[in-house]
Image 1 (cartoon, rainbow, N blue to C red):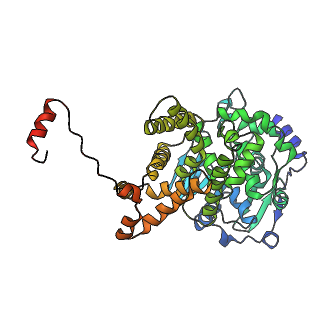
Image 2: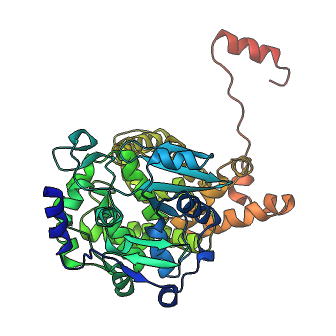
Image 3: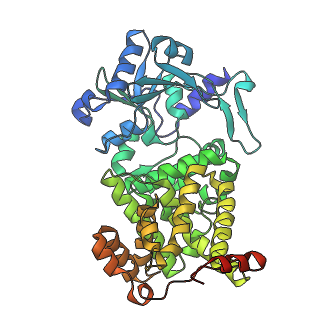
Length: 450
């Protein structure tokens, strides 16, 4: 009875429909051929087994925006065990949300069972003291599943068989208006999953739209709740944000909403410095350009750029305390990464790339003797040079340093020799130091040249 009462209340809210709007192909124009072969196979297999199955979420949103989806998710009324029984190449994953990954060659489609409302068994729906859902394996109807999704633009169901879109929340209208609108009470939904605040900022930047005022209102006040989310999950969401093709707008949106304090707290300092702001904005703009051109992007390089001016500040501070330049740099790198990993859990494979890129920067100052040749052989040389070019473009280092290295790497052996700086290339060769004491005297006596 209580569940039916809640459903009647929800159905009475503005914008929430008890029966969905069925939008035919003639109105939305998305043909089944635009759905990946694997997603079509999954929906067909489930429907032939007697279950409901739809392509859902971001894929439908992106297709309506005429953007090619990066992946396709499917929602069904079949349980994870029933899905697993239909598809031989599949596996059940997840603890907080139990899902099924169905593999078709290189493609993987994520299949979720329709989520329900509050469960009778409290163990299946655990929350922390702030309201964040820790475990949610409660299944329900398609209507309940639509209401459990975060934003109206993500609560759309596409049926490849009929080529219809089912819309319970008027999400299609919000896509047309480029509005990010929370389904249900925004504060409660952010407390259930604080990552939704990051997602709101990312979607607003991606759509070039606005967060609806009621959806936006609690964000600054609830932003500290992100600190309660596992750092690995926050990193995953930040990676989506930075590799969205709209990283520049996303980072500015994070800052304007006050969401950066627990993630990239140095942004306030960096963006108030002309050189720092220019460096970060250039790095983000170049990343966006590469994403749009479908070129590979290195997360390690991107985080190295975001944190570089924090490393610079710590480096100078260590030198001011008497540390020598290179040990001071390594001390600064370790200090910044240790502080950042607590917030974002940046994987070690990325922090290793970051440290190598940073450590290469002082080596670019040496343009004589054998050092430039040795630097060319370094496996991270290209990334280090790209980073140096960013520093030059932002005015942090002289432009001719980066241009010299650009010429040097492409030159012939003869041309490289001529590029070495004359004042350093013509200097006297350093004599090898001999050990002091008795061993040193014996070495001198044994050396006929001496």
